[in-house]
Figure 1 (cartoon, one colour):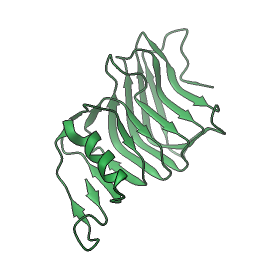
Figure 2 (cartoon, rainbow, N blue to C red; figure 1 turned 135 degrees about the vertical axis):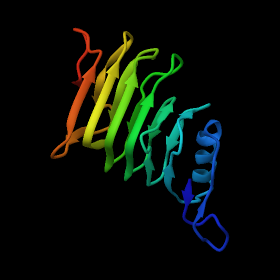
Figure 3 (cartoon, rainbow, N blue to C red; figure 1 turned 90 degrees about the horizontal axis):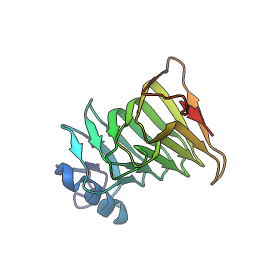
Length: 178
C-alpha cells in the first residue's frame, strides 16, 4: 500500500500488509487522511472484512484475486487486472456507491458464491469499463451489473475496445439491468 504523506514530513511511504489485515489497514489510513494512492497485490487476498476504497486511488491486482466484498465510495478510483470473488457470507463482489470517474480495467467478478446480489452494483455512480470485463454468476446471483438510480443518476460506459464476458447466466438473470 502506497501513501503520499505517511513517512514523516509528509513523505511517500510503502507498507507491506498481510492480506487478512488489508481492509482494516486501508480503513485506518483513510480515516487518518494518510492519502493512499495505490494498492499493488503480490498474491491472492482473503479479506477478513469488506474492503472499502474511500479515497482516490488505483488498485493494481496484477492478475491476483481478492476474496470478499469490495466497496468503492469515492471518486476517481481505478481497478486494474483484478478478480474479485464473493463468499457464501456476502452479496455483490463490487459495489460502487455515489462515486464518479470509477474505471474498471480487465476485471473479473465471480459472484458464484453469494447470499444474493449482483456481480457489480453501480448505485448513483458512473463507471467506465475498459479491457475485458467478466462476470460469473451463481444460482443465487441477481444478475451481472445492477445499474441502480436509488441514490442519483447511474451509468456504465463501455470504452472503445472493451469486451464483456458473462458465464453462468440463467433464464431469469440479465447481464445488465436497472
